Picture 1 (cartoon, one colour):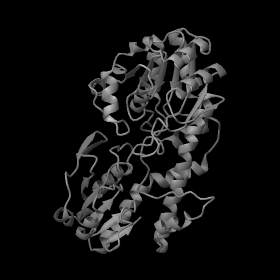
Picture 2 (cartoon, rainbow, N blue to C red; picture 1 turned 45 degrees about the vertical axis):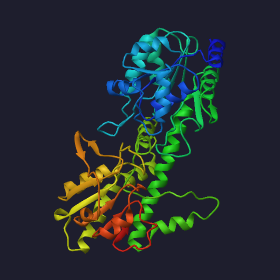
Picture 3 (tube, one colour; picture 1 turned 90 degrees about the vertical axis):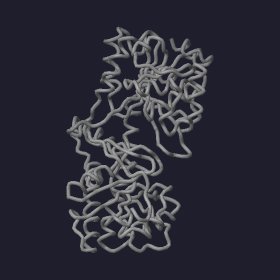
Picture 4 (cartoon, rainbow, N blue to C red; picture 1 turned 120 degrees about the vertical axis):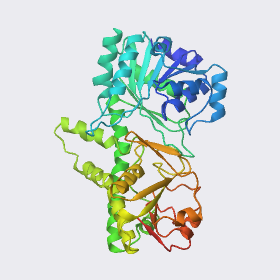
Length: 437
């Protein structure tokens, strides 16, 4: 089986399947098709499938023309029918792994995908989970489901592994194709073949580890590392505010040290699919072993509390102008979770807006990349444009995403007061009316 699959990879006769056509799945499917492998994407959302099959792109990290060309050439197609699994040799699972209402890992999408794959999987298939999850998912959850549903034996009839997604939306340098990949699979043969598949597609290095659990844990470590350090930055920013010190100037100065320091920046909270969620997966799993992850949980408390803290700071700024938050008009600039992208998954700006509303403020938002967003079942529509007259009508402007295509000098000149949580106005010569986090 190993030699047959390696031969298929070499001559590119292998067919690839990607389950989940979101921010991870679609770029991966495009890269596999560009590398010469016929690729079939699956998604439960009919709209996404229709867009892909029409050659219409909806993910920022995918080049529009690449998608259109691959579809027209028959190298890439999409479906809502899980029976496509019987026709593929390699399956990447790229489905969401959110938290439930109790901040517990929700792996229902992974579980249901494994069950459906098992219904149609044939001998000689490689299955790789890319969705971020707790250590043990591949071996403790996926393996038994796939074996039971398919009647096949892992390691003998099919290969199973984990290779964590590394996607940074909006990153101008590192995309799916050139980002190094980690692979951990069940058995040496599985590791060799799955790694060979990624090497045939990607330009980045492929680093092999000894088991899926190692690969699962390293992904959690990557993002928990960021969570903890951002928590430190947020706590330092709060202390610096009390002491009348500009944290942003402090971190710029510290960054001049050429060793032993990496800059992290404060903000209104954490956003994106990984960094705000992954530590919860780790702390949840740690409790199974009677371990309390004190440092990790402390950083989570700090970061989760930043939206509330930012609203408290906004209220104090308004007080300086004799305004109560409950009687104020606030304009929030930017609801994306990071600058220059249209992704608002887990964006702290949404919580900031909700808390402002809860405290009686009248709130509008403007984001050049996001016309509207859905939060807790409600659709919120943003302003289409901003200008001097519009901005001057608000009691406070809160900057919660540092989009580079916003005229911050115009905002400064027109605003009554500005609370900049992202230091987007840092380069302005005049800081009048601006308070930073």
